[in-house]
Image (cartoon, rainbow, N blue to C red; front, side, top):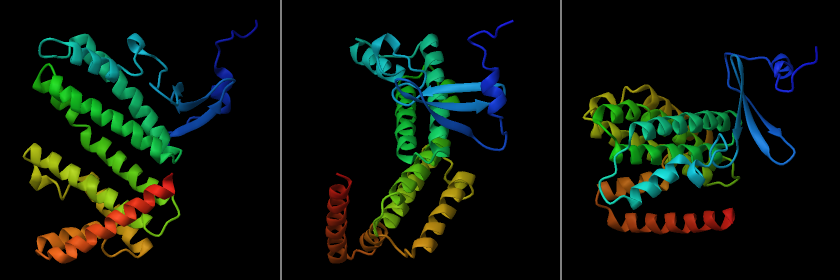
Length: 254
């Protein structure tokens, strides 16, 4: 009996599942590239651009974009319906899978992009949530997304050969830690901040960058110290240095 065209046995047999790592690859098709992730009993295929499943909900590039359109056109307070909550969760899961694919492939700028989509969707859901319980059930994952986003943003900086990039990577970690701190403050859990596993991992990552690249204090860290100590002339000089460096970095990227 001839094998059916939709049989994927040959894929599974030649690509073993490894439970100890993220099994992912980029596959070049006739008209585009796609991501494939090997899971325990099959393969996930994700689009590289737009929504990971390739869908365009009511013509919108993502369900998030569709919801923003609906909210902007609503003549009353927009609250997510039960069906919309289900669709939101589908999109969260899809972007999570693609984000960890990008991290595994060291495509850090793309990981940042997908993390930003998820964080923005979380912000939208927080405002338009049907109830507090649903909000909390999603907000509990925000630290993990911020952790991925911070890690990827820092590693993106290190991909560019420039003497300032280590400092910029450390600044990215500091910004991520600050966002996490504000989150802990928002939920009256500041005393848990220092002992949080993700916070400790980012702190260790920052310390390893300092040691590897010989960075004692970044310009932004020096600026914070100058402002705290009311050394305003030094602060003004540091702001000029930061502005000049940012202009130079922007020119290099172009």
